[in-house]
Length: 261
Ligand code: NAD
Image 1 (tube, rainbow, N blue to C red):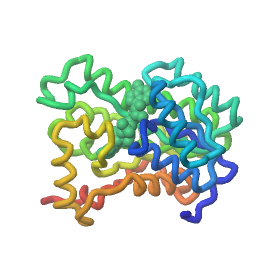
Image 2: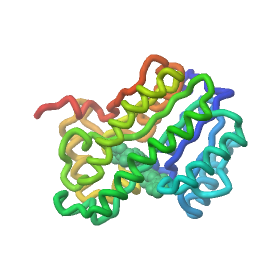
Image 3: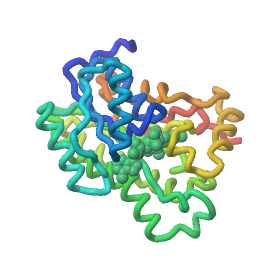
Image 4: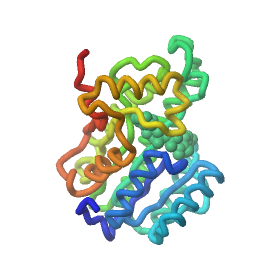
């Protein structure tokens, strides 16, 4: 559809929970471009949901691993990428679309964040990217491309986004550090920073509807962006179109981030 040919390429897209997930939009554009995909999941419920989505699309070259992957567990991450190695023998692109913080940390005041909520948010939302990229890069013989999803709360204060903003700041630093270390092996590492999109995770942030209204009022494009628009930016970064780009955070937010007032 977008004139990009990924046939013969293998991708892992982690973070499909349902059809509203940004990861699902990324899976759709990569599949459309011809890539063979592995779609991991956290729970049996997500597994059933993904299998239904795949059946609904009539996709054939997409594999759902036999076991779940909780990215808080090193063994699960190793098991996932060992499965990818056995199934496909190599990996070309990896999309990390995973974040989590305990609900109580996404409401109320940031200064009340507990040590445990802070640990969990940083572990699942930022460290998992380091561990998964290490495992993914080991399968990217001769090169590959990795993308994660961040949010502008890494740079500016969004009330109630709280510790997830700290996690996104850590994630963006990890993008630069990993890009620097993996670049000599021709593995590129980038992030897409979308504007607010109504997904299951986003709806857990108190006042999320207000964020969306702010973007409609103030972003140069005067609208909220769509999952598919994040998918297209990810396709650019994960394909040869982005061959010279690494360590970058690409905002897909209707231009909201450039505004001063
Ligand atoms: P989503 O709820 O559809 O996806 C979140 C995914 O994270 C789910 O698939 C969930 O299972 C997975 N996950 C959480 N904890 C996990 C764990 N321990 N192990 C494995 N998987 C786990 O929501 P989404 O909005 O599509 O989120 C995807 C990414 O996009 C997140 O990193 C989010 O921060 C980022 N993002 C979202 C928005 C937005 O407005 N929706 C904006 C900017 C960035």
